[in-house]
Image (cartoon, rainbow, N blue to C red; front, side):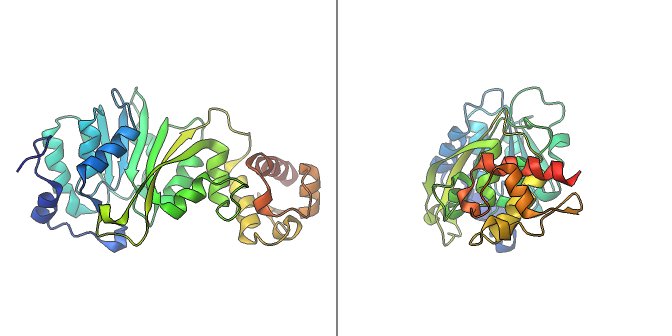
Length: 290
């Protein structure tokens, strides 16, 4: 049996190459080509676009991206067992699939896409165990605007809700929401039930679109991260307490002076401060650390 792209169904590919999903690698494979096609279309239109995909596994989403017209897919895969299956896709789409064996956490993304003249986009069913780390790294990248024009990524539903959260959703609003809201506009596109995966996870997943802002509030991303980490690690405490002992550039800052200089009430809690407020705190903190 062949599919629309002339390749065997993914279940046959997995059986042929003995690709049982590994929990240690955060793997959950998508076999439904209708679903992978929907994700690929969410990242479109793809004509002239280079897609960076992380953790393609047996290549279900990879195939969908190529079928939907991506000019090139750069697939970063850590699991050596999957490389032969990906090579078969590369043979079916000559010159359009670049397979990069290696760990996404150690990848130099700018070097990977160096020389590409058209748009670059990230689209992936991210391994659950490294998804937020990868996203934070992409959002902290310098210089800005980044090397990608959009990201369409799958996360656990609870992580997706944290990405798009604002102070209006206090339970979900935290470090990730500040970072994502600072440098991008994000929205949840649709949910994916556990039954769509093999093996099925215990949670619902969501596909999230993240579009970089051309001119985010100016501030140092590392300092912003340090401030949000301190503020949200003690989110029930007032900022005058949670920011106590905050160190920036090797200098410990006085929390009350920092808050007063930023125009923020010392009795506020982290969940009450919007992105602009945190960016202001980061700028003031950098000035105070000099």
